[in-house]
Image (tube, rainbow, N blue to C red; front, top):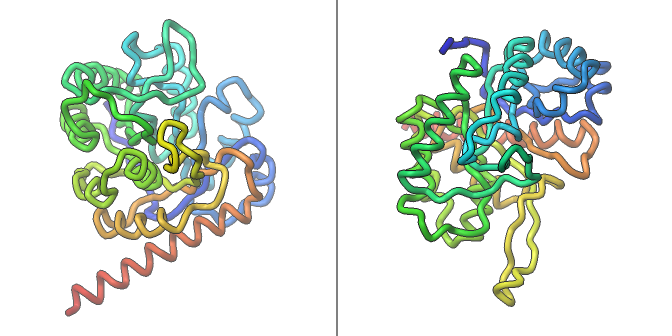
Length: 291
């Protein structure tokens, strides 16, 4: 597996979705970096040409929603090969995907579905992550999911599972801070304790995204948080982001907004807020170190 040394900026970037692509190519906004979903470009030659043009001027992160490392039936090698071709064309700073499964017997499901955290699953996911890394020719970065239910057959925590996955495969981890807050609310655990249990040396990237509260039909009077990526980041997630920065240090941080897209200016303002929080935390740490 080749080690790539493309610059990975420890600042905030924004998701580049197809409705904004032409505008971004034309205006070249002041963005730290962009994240793309390769599935939006693989069958779109014109969009791929525009992306290659942008990749000469901006760091790009590739975040796949179709590489299903948790599927018991294995990786779609044809899809992985197409992702590899795009990765080779733009040389992204990072390539990432989800700790989930989303395919079954050749069919792609429009969901990122949960896994039991046990040794059997760990062996399967580790084998698939190894295959993905060999197929891409570079390290893969695995993201923690948004969770709504726990699975009774789990024998380890999510952080234990992710830590062992990183140890066995050499993969890196993407800590979605909003997912940690959301899952902590839904499953009843302390999100700060979750971050404390993550291996700092494995963290390559952070995510922040919007979520909404909905009534929990199974628990009258209770609410469940749903990962919608369709609005500004909640203040509670910003507070947890500051904690994550103190835990992990400055990291490239994505503003993740996929539905009901706002204009690019709004996305850049959210990225600027993330950068300001990171700067404030850095200054606080410097003052503390200086006594």
